[in-house]
Image 1 (cartoon, each protein chain N blue to C red):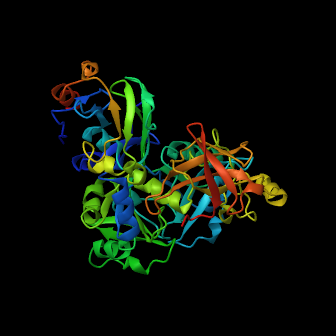
Image 2: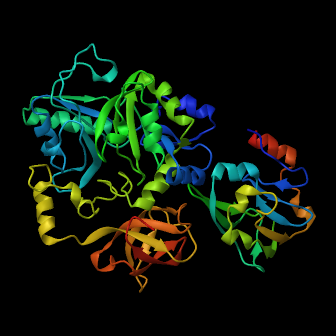
Image 3: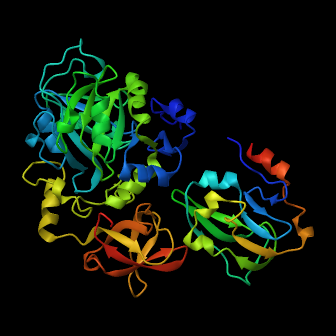
Length: 124
Length: 379
């Protein structure tokens, strides 16, 4: 089975993605498939600061609990509150409506992250 | 440690099932989506490979005596083709496992009979220990047979029988249609009744039992015929993994051996676990005196359902607190209920907190989530 890995995003080995344009963060299609049906998401509040590599939230499927790690440091400028009532968006559209938080980051801070090709190799 | 493989491990892998270790077996946890599999069982039909469940055959003149002394229920009540739920307790009344005991037909089987049925004495019984308990229960039965000088055979036939559970409102018609021409109409079986019936040419033991709260059957078939028999069900019923089996049984408030009770980690008696209906104190079984004393004195804690009012997912081991924030118990099983869309849990609480509606909290990652005690099945 092969998974979508959009070219315009950067990735952590722990399967989070960040969009360098918007600062939006989510988990990959591969990650949501591994988790199975997502039933709960715990996210920081708007205005909280997160640090690159530190936990910023939790995603839970029926069978597993998984910590979420920030791809970059920055302030949380938006939270996808739609996930509180519809966590299944993470399964249905992990790179779109299933986004989790939006960070205010400098693009230069993303250099340590994986490119789409590198991440695709990791999950192959 | 090497995992034990069910006979259809590769067949499931070809369907892209995800696997998990359970009781020492490498079992499918999810074929497509736990939520979709769960819904199929509630609304139409699902089929589970539960070949990790144990099978121990006990046959011969003293079989009933041995079973009656090692299980909490009254095995003498079983006629051929009857099934009975029971606990297996140690001297202090703590449950080692729970099981279903089947009485097999009263016929002198010969080696000419096919598959796993060959050559045992009568009366004959088959009981089903939970996954990973088969070797321990076989040893327990053999040791006690020898100690009490009883005359019966005890055989661990776990790897002779595959087991499939076909569950859901459409299961009766589906299983009846799968029986070979000339076989019995299994829809005539009442709840907890069983019979031999031919499926794909194989002699299978089919029982109107299950672990989902839905109508349906459990079909034991010879290991060597597992693929042909599975194929009879797998097109019309949704293949389901252990993930859906867990969410279905939690919604019903059914116990999971090794998790909701365990002699080491969660020592509980049948009365605490709220399965007193499976205890017959008029029989002489190991643990009977301790349970008679507890029946007299009453239990201090009992097994209840808990529904969360706040968002969060209760999981095994999470603390339960009372209104003052004191820890009063722990979650033994929990999930987000796929049918209800609410977080639900099972666990033991002091009896003064077990009335439905009692307010408690479940501690999720250090934060108290409001919850209330409810009766099971959850609804």
